[in-house]
Image (cartoon, rainbow, N blue to C red):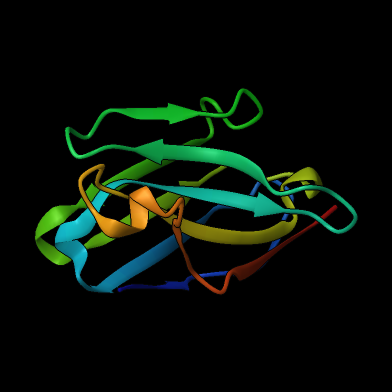
Length: 123
């Protein structure tokens, strides 16, 4: 099993910055790509950014140019640096990890999720 624990959430004013961290533990060798999702009140969970084992990243259009995802494989940690925050960024942010294709979890359609960390941006 893989366990993900997020940290770094909090409250910030519009235009401020925040850095989220996600530490993975357990069978981290089963992880392929990692990423961040968010869910605002009354909204569906949406992709924010992903980064694969080759450190190639993808971003949602709404955060391009403002957010940066990074990954430290040696520390089994993924980060999300958020800048120029707006109230629309207010959400619970979840860390996600995809299992490698040759694992039981992938074959079972299971992904790994953290419990989430709340980010609140005030106008």
